[in-house]
Each structure stands twice: as structure tokens, then as C-alpha cells.
Length: 386
Image 1 (cartoon, rainbow, N blue to C red):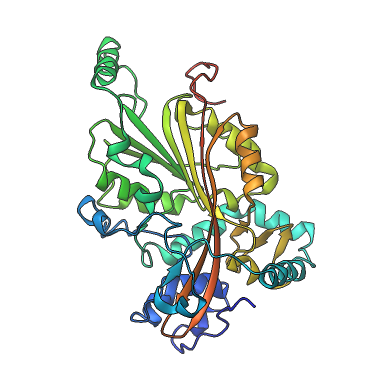
Image 2: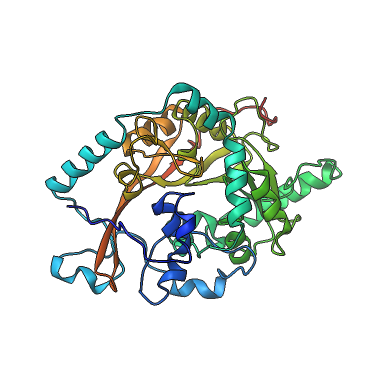
């Protein structure tokens, strides 16, 4: 059976439990409850935009790429905080399927589902208003798993840079587009309060780098812009609804080298995911790629949902009104290939996290993808998307 944490003893924080699911509550407050328990627990691996604790000098101590720590002897499970690529038994798979069938047996009525869709931005604004940037952790895996975000991966030649600079001079710098003179452009979709953007800017000092970032929540974007680490000469933050096909990006087509999507695609309606990926793919240069990390099917968070929280198959609403979908590899692969992208990576990170102090085990399932626009992709006008 899958061991799950079911009780938390904390008189100080107990009044908050009714407002958000236990799984999300623990991700925020666990470090305060048991700071010395050796526990590795996150909801979405964050970094504080205020302290900016992730830096180039601190990256030497980051953990190795996932998949390198295997549990060969079950008796040694509590020797480390986490184990990679843990194989589930048939009993565990069966228990997970049964749990999902149970918690999805009573989907919310259509009128309630519509309310969560129309008020989605309000729920995310409330989330960031409450939590701001108080409970964030370093994304220690960021540059290990996605080296495309580091300066070492920016392999554009000096000749290419000179050509771009000459082109800008020929135009007399008439372009007012943010980042128009950059030689390497990154967009993070669903930036939150700078969880990925600030580590990139702090680690990558290449003068040719420019980072765009957007979020559904205007509150989150304002927090990003108010951070002392926000530099308008290297970054542009804006509000954008990923699921709105009529909302244009302030970025020309075929201008981006990398698009980052970390725990964001799962937050929108499944029926709107394909159009969202297709529109993003048009922003990529030939050879540019989308990097994604998101929730996988039967992740512990999915198994923790109670009846009455299911919106549709594998799509749920949390206690705070935000929503989450749990993917399979095939589903994500279909979304990307249907948008004309080629697979570079599509991997399940099936991880066992443990609390050595309490002798508890928790099973997490994430999916990590990299999909690239073909280098010979048909050219399209460098216009802003309609």
C-alpha cells in the first residue's frame, strides 16, 4: 500500500487546514513544522525572488540529474530523503487506480465547474496575495535538468551576434519591442513570483540574454516587478492568460530560443491545452524548444483528493479554487507533436520521498518533457500573434 501522511499535529497552523488541501498545506508549512526532520517536500520547487538564494556560485552543490539514485534494497529506504525511478508494485498500481476511481466518481455539477473557470484569475490572485513570496525553496534541479537555461548552452556564435547588432543599428533601434536586440530569448509561462526567472538572471550573466515571463495572476506579476532582482533591461514581465486564444503575446513569432512551462499547463482546462501549445510553438525559432515539468498520473496529490473535488477525468479543483490536471506521457506527447514539435525527451520522474524522522514514505509522479521545433520548419512572418 502507498503510505500517505494523514495527520499533522500543529495547534498553531490547524485553523488554515480548512482553506487549502492538506497536500498543498504541507508543501507550504512543513519546513516550519519540522525543520530538522531531513524532509524534502515541495508543491512546485520555488526560489525566493527577494533573497535570490540560487546563484552561479551555489550551483556546484546542486543535486545530480534525476534518475541517478535507485532504491535497490527496500531495507535501505530511509537512508536518503528521496529515491528516483521507483518501480511500483502491481498492488500499488491497483490501489492508485482504485483511489482515482473513487475520488472522481462524483464530479462537480457544470455550473460549479463554470464558476471555477470564469473566476480562475481571482483564485490565483488570492493565492499569491496570501502566500506572496514567504514559503519558497530553491529550484535546485533547474539547471541540471534544463541546461538550455544556462549560459553554457547559449552557443550562438560571435558572428551571429554581430549580425544581429548590425541589423539593429541599420534599423536605427526603431524597434520598441522588449528584448528586440537580445541574442538568446527565453519565455517562462506561468512565472508565479519569479520561481524560475530570477535564478536564470542571477546565474546567466550573458549580455545577450533576455527573459520574458508571464502569469495569469496580476498579483504574481506585480510581485515579480517589485522584486529588487527585476531588471527591465534584461526581463519583461506581463499578465497573460495561457488558455485565451484571443490574447496575444507581446513577442514576435519565431523569436524565442526556449519556452519554460513548469507546473502550469496542468492548471488550465484540458480542452484548451492543445491550442495553448500550438500558439506557443509559433513563437519558437526553428530549433527552439519547449521545456515542461508537470504532474503525472497517480501522483500523491491526485490520490489525496476527496470526493466532490473532481471536475472531469483526472482534473480536480483544490480547496483554494485553483485547478490541476494529472498527465500521462502519451497525452503530453500528443499535445506537442500535434503542434509540429519533435520529441527530445519525455520522461516520468517517479520518485519516492521519505521523512526519515517519522519513517514515512510518499510517492510523487512528475513528467518532464523537451520538444523542439524542427530546424527546417516553414518560415512565418515575424508578427505578433493575432
